[in-house]
Image (cartoon, rainbow over all chains, first blue to last red; front, top):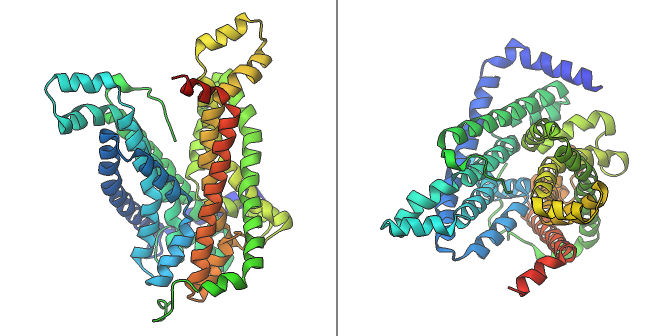
Length: 228
Length: 229
């Protein structure tokens, strides 16, 4: 099967009307996929955003945060998934835990780096205007650090959406079902079609974050640099 | 699928001793599958990054492709190469894993090479030109060395990710240490899963350490400047 055949087969698979309805239909699987991804990202953000902001603001524990994030990046997601499935059982928990572990490092590191890199003059000016610690953090540091914080959230979101595919291996839904089931049945159009859907979803996530960036980053900060 | 039986420990330490040969083979194969993509990625990303800096119009489309590649699930990328190199472990089938991971590493490395080259201060570039450096010599002796920290930062992210992603390859029969995930999972036996997770993390930390050391050796001026205050 060459590339053209693959594309034709995937196209036929994607446009077949039978694939667009019912429990195994694309809309339903897409919603499941988005559901797991959004839940994992939200939990990771609730933990990592305040932690990163606090560490960046106080300047204490930065080394620990960065080392922890690097360690967490090295954890193989599939291994963690299968370990949690083996110890507990099939279901939502084994999927969400590895996805949270995947999403936390970029959010944590970018928030920390973003807050830490805020110009000392800006902080001094905020203090000079009578702000105390929390005020400086909320009104000066966070708005200036927003581009990096959003970059962290974007990186995390894309990785989570791409990796949520393995949820199928823990026996639950999402777009990964097309890939894992297709692989088991040697149904390659389903595998390629499912992969194309995940890629499109990742592109949409990118565009959403570009939109958020346009809406929330102040004029004075446009064109800020990127880090990992 | 049932949970682990009561009384079964999370780790049976004697299993490790009984399987050292198997673990060594898998570890070496894992390193090959994970690190060749980084090597290939650097060989492609450096010239490509240089071209993107030289011809600015080239960068937006390249960055677009890189961003899309970054979002592709590795499993999906592996699929695309199965028709060409086949399924299995060793020989030609290794490229079913190595080439997709090379593409993935490019999605991290190319933007970093470009950012690194763009981080060269304009006065430094002008000083090199004023000293009579031609374009090529300025690139090799001034611009690339200054770009090293940013390029290595990218290589570190790509390497750690690659070492972790190889294990996904086991779903198509070639995942280095990921093999133990499936063996453990199919028998409700946690020891192989934990042991290979730990080995993968250690490989990542070790490779990361090697890259940090390489950066120190390649940028001796960074240390001198710091010690001089």
